[in-house]
Image (cartoon, rainbow, N blue to C red; front, side, top):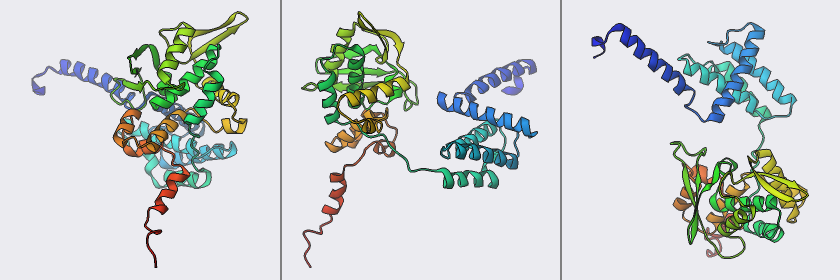
Length: 336
């Protein structure tokens, strides 16, 4: 088949495929991953240029020296092993995509990476989980507030808890794509880290009785703020005439700051509020579902997790649950 093609036509076709291949190789990972690799590769390129090293293909010895450089910088700044690991990942990624041997897999670079883990690694610290009890305190504080900004934070925490949403999910929720039904609402998450096919996900949240209903609270917020479209989380402009919501989305750092301030207004101490991160909603909802016996299949599907291992990583077992193991070993029923 290929032999019947004219050389010049084949050359044009190959050039087109090569252009497509170059584009594909920059999109085979998540956007944040590619962006991170680009930054790490830039640092390696600058280091190699300053030292007179060849950056591509790189010598394993030279790469090991660069990783030592990254290790010393991380240690001086009190960071973990991540700068070393990310640099090694980026260098290996570029080499493999250029059909070159990965120098980071050689003995010397691997030794530096393992050394960084042993010297700089810290125990993982997970965000403290949000609970229904904390949401009840927030409801008492903000449910009847006329300040659109604080009501928005409260509603976002409710929806994040009920929908197992992380920050990256919530920032892509557009109110125009929220469908309200008599007994539930459907949120369309256009973009998500777990959405490998990039088709989006519909998240279903049921109507529940009481003040903590995510559906009725969202409807009330939309009516009071006068919004029917645009991002769920957005900036709020406060003037002497009142407050209005703008069309511009809220940043990650600003949401985290406001969330912790809302928790403090609800009665938590500053030290307690600092223990909550933006994944507290997802962790709290998943843990509550596990505690109330929601089947694993439904819990994993609701959280849009790719595997049971990842989904279970968001469940934080309580002391009472941990004690069930010893209490159900038959020790109390067996007498000597």
